[in-house]
Amino acid sequence: MTAPLQGKTLFITGASRGIGRAIALKCARDGANIVIAAKTDSPNPKLPGTIHSVAEEVVAAGGKALALAVDVRDDDRLSAAIGEAAAHFGGLDILVNNAGAISLTPCEFTPMKRVDLMFGVNMRASYAAAHFAIPHLKKSTNAHILSLSPPIDMDPRWFRNHTAYTISKYGMTMATIGLAGELAGAGIAVNSLWPRTIIETAALKMVGGEMLGKQARTPEIMADAAYTIFTTNSRELTGQQLLDEPFLRSRGVTDFDHYAVSPGSPLLTDLFVTPDL
Image (cartoon, rainbow, N blue to C red; front, side):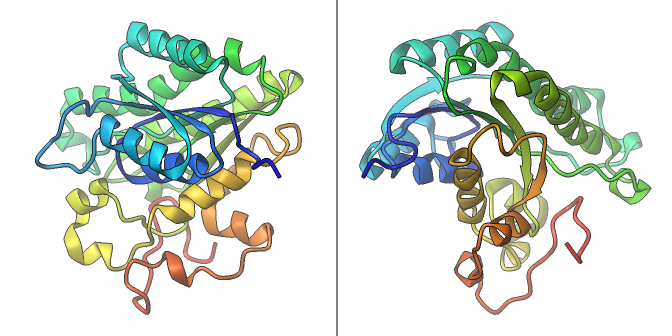
């Protein structure tokens, strides 16, 4: 029996580590074609993984890989990379906007260079990637655009102390809402996905250190949720602001213990998520 994503092509930004890497490996096990698009072309002593190391893991998992060095803020490079991916694998089925920049700092202490980085990597690049990918996605029979961005809640608590970051992430979700309506007729699903609890990533370690990581889940829960989205008919699931655990529960998943970094430790609800969700 053919696996759901066998032969499908995914273009994943920021896929050299963390959630992007987990999504890549999950889909590779189906025999998917994975385009690892990220800045990390050579080893960084402060960060794990490169586009090449993840490409090797993708092949080992059963998929095909194309490692492309891409700064998502560079329109020319992003456009060329998406075109190269489509040409290499004969099409494009799924775009994952995973690359991100974060600074949980108040306005007074957020340099404009950092503001530009967050707006450029989070909001603008996800929109640009969609812009360049849409002509290719229109040729797919089950096309998806997935942005890793939170559900929008205009409560001031989600803005205060890190207004720039919140605007940049909510901007991604606003694009989800708009593009879902724009592309519904073309059969291209556009959704946002966000973790209910914090996820163990390099970014988390930089923000909260090792202790915070013990209250986290592994990136595999996000990968499983993303896979479930991709294997759903694109005309049946679009325009949604999804949280990983509630979405997986709606699809019949009941066991979440194996996602915990430290089994038995209390989990910490992620930013932009109210504890009761």
